[in-house]
Length: 100
Image 1 (cartoon, rainbow, N blue to C red):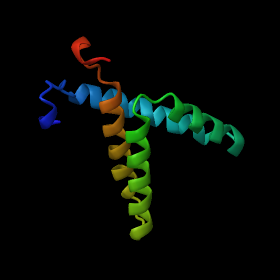
Image 2 (image 1 turned 90 degrees about the vertical axis):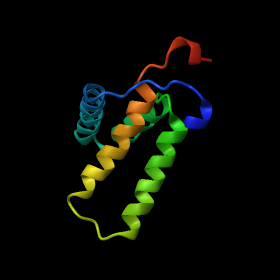
Image 3 (image 1 turned 90 degrees about the horizontal axis):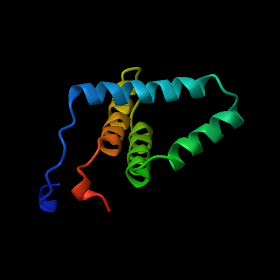
Image 4 (image 1 turned 45 degrees about the vertical axis):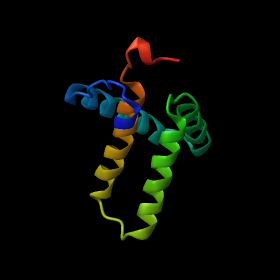
């Protein structure tokens, strides 16, 4: 980010809270669906995400991390934080001068 010489927007705690609430609501929505609908909803979420490559990278790294450890209940907080960072990066508006 430093090497880009861009002025990146500040991601506030309010924005982090907003994105976390949005993500948790999305996950809870999927919990109430049958497997077929849950898969369709997950694909729709991924296809509509502005940072698909970053999202995929973080999910793969998180999955690989979980395979290397003995899972604990507290791991869900690490996974939530990782997903929240991706969403904060993806959904915080960049100044118009940075848009392609």
